[in-house]
Length: 101
Image (cartoon, rainbow, N blue to C red; front, top):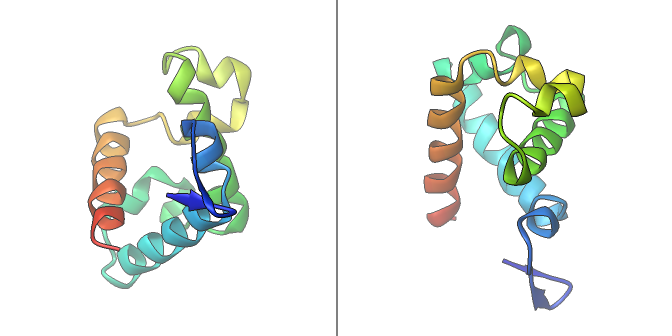
């Protein structure tokens, strides 16, 4: 993905970009319209602005840390790590969505 007319070089740079957030918000909105169970990764199944920020930070931390460590670094990540199978499915869905964007 290009950011400021160049390719993102690291996962952290990618996930910190506005373009990533835009695609993520569109993806989550689509899941919301479908009332998808994948949104249960979020507290109450609702992905508001703060929850999306926390989700992005959690994903960024998961790039370099094991899932057991992340809640000790960022306590609000624990909500996303409750059901790792569901989180994995959501990440795969986001990836597939992105590929078709």
